[in-house]
Image 1 (tube, each protein chain N blue to C red):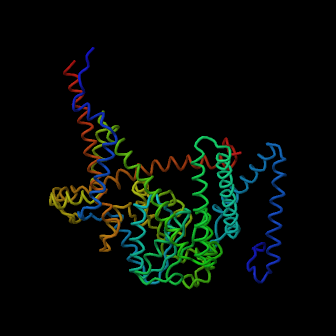
Image 2: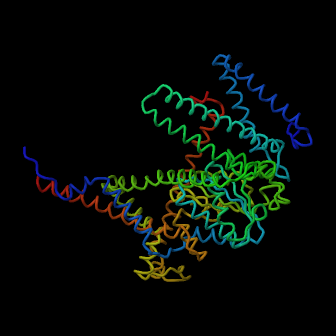
Image 3: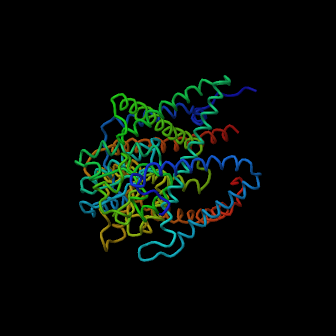
Amino acid sequence: MWWQIQNPESEGRILVWAIVLGAFILVLGLIPVLHALPPRGRRAIIVVVTFFAGLFFATEFFTPVGPDGKNFLTDYIQPAQQMIQVISALALGLGTYGLIRLHLRNVVQRRPQWGYSVVLLLSFLVMAGFSIANTLSEQQLVEKTDFLERGFALLFDFTLVQLDAAMFSLIAFYIFSAAYRAFRIRSVEAGILMFTAMIVMIGIVPLGAYLSYQVLGLSPAPTPKDADWITVLVHNLALPKIADWVLIYLNAPVQRAIEFGVGIGGLAMAIRLWLSLERGVT
Amino acid sequence: MQTRPPTFWERMLAIDRRILYLLLFVDIVAFLLLPIRLRAAISPPVQKFYDEIEKLQPGDLVMISSNWSASTIAENQPQLEAVIRHLMRKKVRFTIISIEAQARDLSHRLAMRLTPEGDYEYGRDWAHFGFVPSLAIAIKGMVNNLPDTVQRDVRGNAVGTLPLLKGITSLRQYKMVIDVTPSGTLPIWISYAPKETVILYCPTSVMAAEAYTFLDSGQIKGMITGAKGSQEYEQLLGIVGLGTPFANAISFSHVLIILFIFLGNLALFMSRRQNRQEG
């Protein structure tokens, strides 16, 4: 693309910095202009930008491609991706700024439970510091010291990962408690659902294979061709085979029907978002 | 009015949830630690997954989309480990990409730990493209022009300069995409990846049910379902990784859940009968 800097070395560092600085000043200059606009003016900008962004991706997707797999818009996808990266980074920066401002205010004004805000700010600073340093060391921009390696491992591998995994694993306990209290056979439909769930729960795990093939002595081999119906029945009585049958022949068609419904709903929602008809978008 | 003490079945119905939590905890820990190793029945999706990787030739290039964070580490880590070990066994080269910020570090560190087993060298046999914020746009970009889209790997190298990607300009030159994920990234790969690229899927157990439609239609060629799928895969590879103990613990936690669902229903039935008898 003509506007991209392909090689900063050959095109001159001063020119590159001038472009970056110019873009920065332009964006900073735009902020007061956007603030000064009345709400209707801001809404109009959002509607127009959203519409053209959607139009670009939809047109690119639906326009037929040539033998090289490209149409007249395909080459613009990569700059669009870079724009999304920049916007995502800005959104992340904005979120970080908001989070820090809120918790700093909690600490300064000694609001209730401000101690948690101190913990959050300290954790944020230490984790961010070690993560950035670790990334820079991976790119050999700073030295990977023993302190950095141990510190990052302590924070990431032995703290963040463990806490995250522990939080998610709590769901298993809630599921167990909820299943015990809520899964009551009050109707024929509930009975069928429970029976099927039990077959699948046992059939898909190793215990199902053990019970079927070791305890009951059923054959794990596929059903022989031209076998009589008794042989077919015996070959397919194993819990893993029944569970697979339920998943493939009962679950898949139902899932497909649900996905069709969700897909149509998603399309309607996408059109509403694209045309800024959805409340709260602007 | 004098109230009678609750019966055994009524007490069962009102059992303290902390007792249930304790039972499940003991069940999981015991079957993780006990040396009971049940053999799994290989499910058709796992067998297909294995067969597809077996078809690859040494030197083929595979894209691993690793999008899991630590919350699903128990399911996605055994999958990714088993897959990387199989790829190394086949001498297949691979690159990793993440749309989840935490997944970038998790998958990079995991690959760094595993690749020495197969004498894999970074840049020559494997690479990590880091974190991309929008998967759909990234896939479109990689199909169009991979080096320009990815630009730099996690180590700051321009990806076009990596020996691994010499002559690679598009995702079309990849033989396979393997999506290891707890989120809905699969439809994005199906929609935007080149049609000739084989897609394999490693979801968490709760995500797997939705993927059977794509297996049925042939849009994905194989699937490893959660930790129990990892155990099946490890069995096919002839190794004991993380999936094997995890799947055994899951087996017996399922038994406990079923047992208590049965007890809950029995308690309800019995307490209702007692109430009817008492008028």
